[in-house]
Image 1: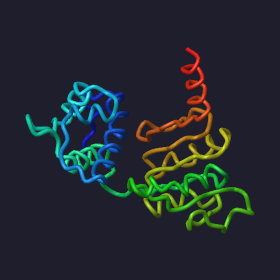
Image 2: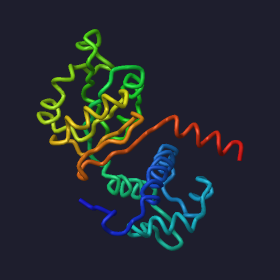
Image 3: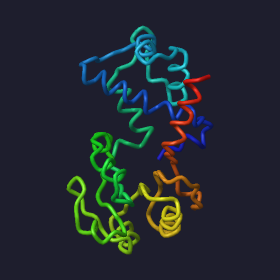
Length: 210
């Protein structure tokens, strides 16, 4: 497995790759087979130089006078992002945000399979969200280990999120998608991606008025 962080690839470049992947997917849907860095840059509102520099970190993929094969580049970026295979996810929290994640079709389209939900509310346990069962919290660790769950999404308040993070430290989990407004103390082998929606809104407000 490639680990580009060990090869000096900046996090800023890695963060731009999903956007390239999304635009290339749209081009495939439109039947576009080849595209130049200039045309892709114009479409995305960036510079051709940035695209070439970003992709050159992974081998380039383009040919002089030919540009990029859209499907090949799409597949290669998928491999770099490790989304060329299915990743199993469980969602902790069967509230509004949990329901929203369960109905998010792009998870499925990108190879992320939400297989179960967990909650402490007795009225939610035994129900289903988007056809997937809601289990009690006490089953979480055994379920993760039995089903080789790689990613846990936390859609619960910060106090509960810290408890769950501590529960899963020694499990199969490799990544946490954290919607709770708190930092989590987990081993370095577990990657945490914080999604604090209010932070994005505050940055939006600042940008709007700056």
